[in-house]
Image (cartoon, rainbow, N blue to C red; front, side, top):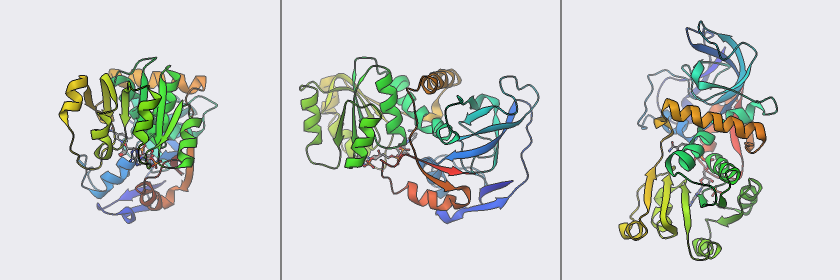
Length: 321
Ligand code: NAP
């Protein structure tokens, strides 16, 4: 089969398409014929070799995909060859025509959901779910600001919050992005590239502020976030690309919490809860991943170059294998 291989850490050009042996499933393992691969910023960070998680070289990137089970190993009970599935982690990497996975990391994909949409579930929807419910403990009737709502994680957070009965305000950096955010179910959209957009937020909440902030670019926004939180408010920090100075008094006076979010810290029990909820959302239609550019697997290097020029409003980028 064909797979993207990384033999040295570096720029996008280190992603090379090669011929490798087909994976064979061992006990409790599943081989998936990958049709679509979710491309996430973290895979670009890992590829540079400067990220906390550093795989042994050579390796094939990726954990998110949508496809069909090709073969199962001894002891696999939940899945069989021919099942439509999405994967959230892989032992051999999903930037490939086939991926070997632990059975536990392979989930059934409802019939009406495309492979591309399945490929958008693992990191984006998993992270949005973890941020919103497992870390920020957001509740129905609360008001949520999704700060960076036009991207993969942000659109997922808007859909999840709306479906759970929250008042949802989302930000984007363009008119197209704001339109996308409204289409995902936000009650209001603001433009984070304009002056004074957080003053508008305070008007929308009649001066009270928001209960929860899902923060996708904390190094830019955390200081201001703390000033627009309601009492007992929570900021879930999901995305961060640098440092920032905050005034702790803003958290103190509101008894506010800053809560870090790391998807990789999800326990087995939390993972089960997360994907039961996400699959129910796919089945009901409340969750409907927005797919943007479809790039051939062979052009993974172009996908990595593009993913770091972060601009929302384009939907989830996928590789097609
Ligand atoms: P993405 O699809 O590229 O989206 C990036 C988002 O950031 C867009 O909505 C973009 O909006 C927004 N943004 C740009 N400038 C902003 C600003 N000044 N304020 C607020 N938002 C701004 O990326 P993604 O896959 O959603 O991931 C987003 C971030 O979360 C990345 O840094 C990623 O590494 C991180 N992440 C962390 C975890 C974790 O476990 N902690 C898991 C997954 C992802 P516009 O383009 O419309 O301006």
